[in-house]
Image (tube, rainbow, N blue to C red; front, side, top):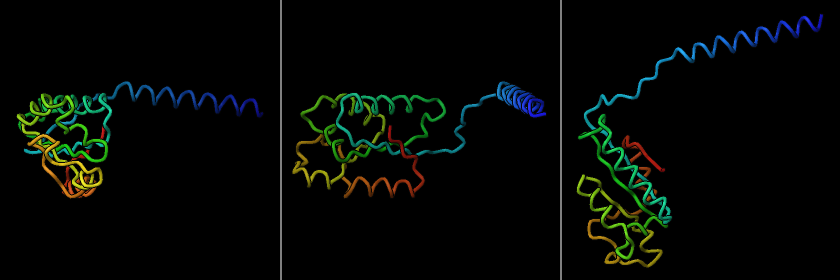
Length: 151
């Protein structure tokens, strides 16, 4: 009797899995559509790793070229902690940053990081804006409905 019950359970499980797999295979995927006239996205950078910095800048370029969002997207990049390195004139990101700035991307820096690390504003690019705290900017933007992206 126990063998029969085990066999019955196995058959039911196999049948359920087959039906579930068949339902999944029949599902049609549709990408998200941009129904709104305007979207806001806040990108977060708190690392100095070159691969990470270049990756976030590449991601921003990619989303700016997404045909669903063309002309509808406002992007702000907030840097704090080690992310301040991206904005330093001494580093090699000026060309990439200016190209994004020219596409409307806004770059902001945490003033608290500047104070704690004794970094003068003259060390950063002139187009960088300042906020009292990076975390405060994230919290406020999120409550304003912004998409928060931390790649």
